[in-house]
Length: 150
Image (cartoon, rainbow, N blue to C red):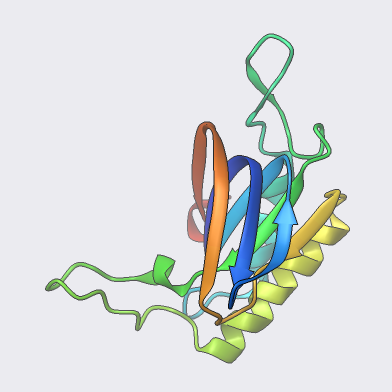
């Protein structure tokens, strides 16, 4: 499972011209679910994300977590994170989980993040054509892969 975490001042998701989710200070997270990912993979990400110390303290040092700053999360499913670009010019998405499994794990991650004490967890619409707007703060962008976490 892969997560691209962007520290944002604000972020929103629009579907068919209608804004469906919006957050202020926090993380906009793109989540890619790989074939074979499990709740154990999800748990590794959920354990790490809220406590990542990538917000600045009073000295300008990245010492504060999402929980410390009462930040929000906007979680967006993105199967293209699972792309295999090793051959040719057209990405292959055969490494992404089947939609039903991916959606179940996406919902699981959202629910577990809510339980972790995050102020607010908002979502995109799984499988929809979404327009994501954000103001990346820093910019700070972190990539997590559940297979690389201890």
